[in-house]
Length: 200
Image (tube, rainbow, N blue to C red; front, side, top):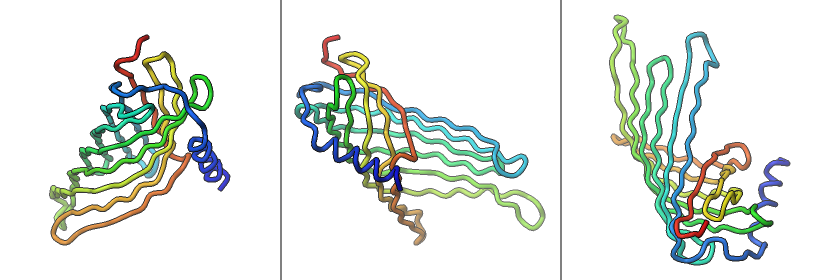
């Protein structure tokens, strides 16, 4: 509960601070995040691994205001034989707000679609494995707050801090699912951005 209150306070501070020019209209923003995890928790011989890379490209439509496209490539697998591949594309709007000197925060709104393929090996009564594939598409709308640190006039280090997201998934044959994710300060993602057009 304390973490949630802290995250709400950070958002309110971001919305009320006045900012000076950091990113100017016409600047291009090129960046991305990368995540990787490999674990052996759970029953013996049960291991999971996942990786995700998310590049994005944006154009400053105003002072400290950026609109752009982001893409994400994801992979997940575990030792029982389950695998998942995904690709997503999102349109986003991000507002950067200077807090003090080189430290600032941002508020990002995004929406898009993801395509996925899940593979699972199911054992029949004879002990033989049967390969099963499931294809799906997921639509999402989300909000993500974050912090940034300006290393140089043209390089920013970012830290996404969770957020709010709604997902609707369609797997075909009448199979669908929807979910709402709310998680501030319990899911982090690190990244870097290059401001093309800034003088170093």
